[in-house]
Image (cartoon, rainbow, N blue to C red; front, side, top):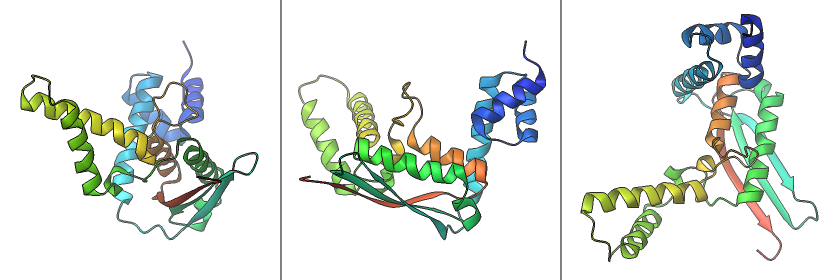
Length: 199
């Protein structure tokens, strides 16, 4: 059995949280490392909600040019202070986001950015695909919503599975939330552009 100090160290390595937060998380989860990670993520999300009204006027414009120079990405990620923009965690986030965009080519940042007419068009396509299925309307509606979630996961940056996580469990918004929790500042993906030769 790992000692409390070892667990705290491992939890800090995994989450980047402070010592006292890690101790509190381990206490709340009866020493379960996975439970403590989940506790800290929930706490981070709750804290992030409190910061949602704060203005993010600082940040970075990051770039990624794929080897060979035929594909490139520019991205603007905002935070509240210049100090946080200079941290390794924030800069790594900007790099990871730029690489994600280069690799997966999202059309929008978040599901809220998808135009209503596009969402309705997708719903119509799914309805047409299932027109011959003899299922109750409420079941079909659930299937359509499931297909829409899949659409968002493909087309919206924050909904996409993070390319560096082979398990596919980490979404891009989890990365942003993690840096938000770690820096205690509001972190916002403002905009991006993806350029491809002949694209």
